[in-house]
Each structure stands twice: as C-alpha cells, then as structure tokens.
Amino acid sequence: MAESLIEIRGVNKVFDLGKLQVHALRDMELDIFQGEYLSIMGPSGSGKSTLFNMIGALDRPTSGTVKVAGVVLNRLTSRELAYFRGKHIGYIFQQFNLLPAYHAVANVAMPLIFNGWEQDRAEARARQILERVGLGERLHHRPDELSGGQQQRVAIARALANEPAIVLADEPTGNLDLHTGEEIINLLAELSRELGVTVISATHDHKMLATSDRILWIKDGAKERLERRQDLKIRVGTVR
Image (cartoon, rainbow, N blue to C red; front, side, top):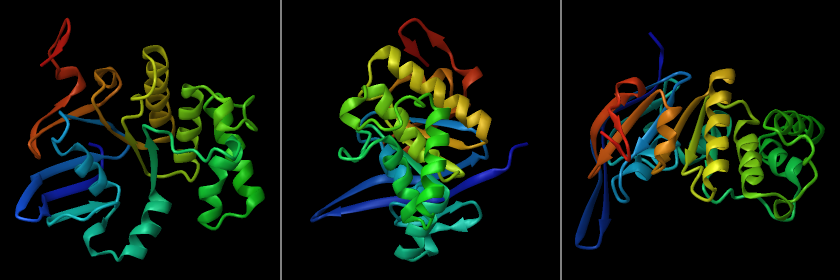
C-alpha cells in the first residue's frame, strides 16, 4: 500500500467577515499518497481553494491538523512555512504567473536562486527541465513570445525544478483551449509517474478525471465523496 504523504485530520476553516462567519472547510479528513494524482473538484465556493491552500502551506486551519511529509504545518512559524514551501512544494497557476521581462530559463531558475542555488547550477537545471517538458527550442523566449500552452509548460518546469515532493496545480487548464489543455493534463500525469511526484489539482475541468488516480468531490466545505478513477460511473455528458 502506498505511503501517506499528506494527512488531514479534523480540519475546519472559518473566516470571520464582520458579523458573518463563513465555514470554508468542515471536519475535513483526508490521506493523500506518495506519487498519486489527486483531483479536487466541486463548484465555486465549495472549499477547493481553501483545502488547496492548507496543503500548500499558504494558510492555516482554524482547528485540526495538516501534516505533510511528517511535518505538522500548524506548528511552523511563517518563516518556517516559507522555507517548507520552497523546499517541498511546486505551484502551477491558471494565470501562469511568469515574469514578462525574463526568458524561460530565467523564469525557471529564479526560484532556485532565491532558495540558495548558485546561478550557473540553477540555469543548468532550468535548461534540463525545460527540455524535458518540450521547450528545448524556446529556452530564451520571453512569455509574450510563447503560446499559452508553452507558457504553461514553463510554469510546469518552474514547479518541478527543485524536485518537490508535491506539485499543486490550480486550474492548470483554465486559460487553455481543449487540445492544449489535454496536452498539459497528459504531461502532468506523465511527469507524476516518471518522477514520483504527488500532483494535486484543484479544477473544474472534467478532462482531469482521465489521468487522476482519485477524485475528491467537495461540497459546502465538506468531503462529499472520494473515488478511484476506475470506480467512476461515466455517462455521455455526465460524471456520477
């Protein structure tokens, strides 16, 4: 049986908005395994992004615990959380979040340099991973010289450059056309298997189901159901 990399126990998240309290997560219980591809699905406002931020050490629960790679994130200081993110987690965003003035190598190398890598080593690693994601001929192109799919490949390379244990992909196909989105989904799945990286995607895109090992469905901040890909009941136009 695969080893649990992420353990979420009794997690609640409440946002105080003046006289209003919003319960973004309710008694969340979840184990995520080393090397698996998990998609988190649900309507807007369901709690997907909040859970995503808990796993990514970007937010803290109101109650409960989030343990990643044996570390209880609740107990870390803000500085320790920042260090943990830089060492163990890669991020892929819907908007790509590339630096427009820098070419692909610099965009991928910069986070490594911020984490203490020497520039030559960081750039060599950036070139290596960019070639792996199919951009060997676009190493010195700026974002405005790349297509949307190519920009997302740069973002994937950046997320994988420091060999993280976890990659968090937030709506990674949201700004891409159907064909390009499928290419990106398949690339993520391929890299997950090849590198043993745990990929967690918060998404509305049902194309993600084809490559996911498991799918977590969230509704009103609570776990509605957790299913293996092979157990899904798929009909034309619907997923049940």
